[in-house]
Image (cartoon, rainbow, N blue to C red; front, side, top):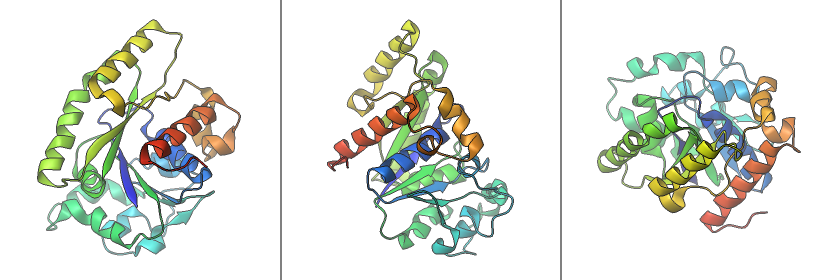
Length: 254
């Protein structure tokens, strides 16, 4: 199983949207996918139609050792989800005194069998939960909005991943950069896309995610873009992105 963390320390960059739709897109291409909501805001959980206030078991109980992995998994349309619950907001303090606290998620995922990919939706901050995600994964995908301001924090983000690599997880690498909210008609956005390419080279996915109203509407219906509007530009863009992911991994696209 390849574990991928979607991480950016800035919010509003399409991180949760990308987690949901990459997971759904890979599942549509025949891969077994586990999505993990590690963000106390529970946006991924909401986006996929679950109420974080009414869950019997969630990622919180899994990390706390009160639930087995199988008890936290919620089947969706072609993929599985481990949702977040409201209790996760207190996890930073509750788990702070536990020895090996950075590896709670990694240890819990050893029981995950039969999946090709696990995708982790990280909090938009560097705390204990994000460290758990980075310690558990082999790859990091960075969603970045095609604007100048989100570009400014990339160096700090790269330094964070490098620090985790030195101290917690030698396997971790930034292997993908996803350009989101892209409007090819705007000269400034094309310039930003070029700058991202200068910073990350071949790690930038060739398929940017264009601005698309359906991508903004789908989470309100508790659906992925493929359920909500499979004929939209958003569905086409995430399909192209998932095909590119599989090509990079050396797999077939169907």
